[in-house]
Length: 213
Picture (cartoon, rainbow, N blue to C red):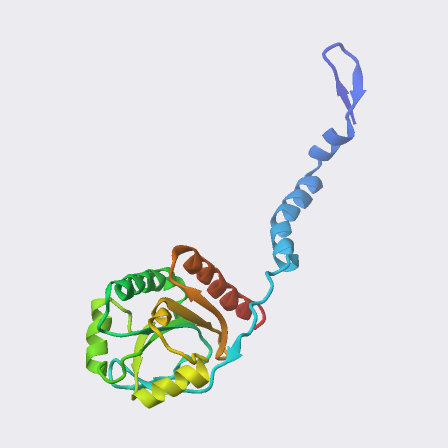
């Protein structure tokens, strides 16, 4: 196609001008624009999987409502395990505040996740006292459960399940990340950087499982 110039003679359109003026070009352009992000999402490399630390055995304790609760109730969920006691000192209180923040940050994935706090004071912490403790923390009972049992049962779960041979209060400030198949995938502290890393890893476990369903 030729184009008339202001000087009275005609000149041919450039290749770019021909392309821009072609309706088919714009159809292909917009199709590519929409398809490329989808292509990238299917072809990008996922972050490496979190290593499996160890498998947890099946377990059953009692929750703050006096109901049996354990690994079967958490089957198919990514969940966090913490240890606590209702007689909380200042360090413990600080850790519980961090757990409250985690509960808020995991609001969007509550259907696929959970958090359990197991008391280390099995002799004193009854379901009733744990219920009062949980309500004071504004714990969502559909997400955050507080568990107790007799001392022998808790000690066995700690040693045989979580592989804690020498228990001390340092475990009050740590969280175990457990996947949908009841395997421990990480151990985290409750400082800001560790919690940020934990949130990323929770998302990786949930999203990777969804991708390969």
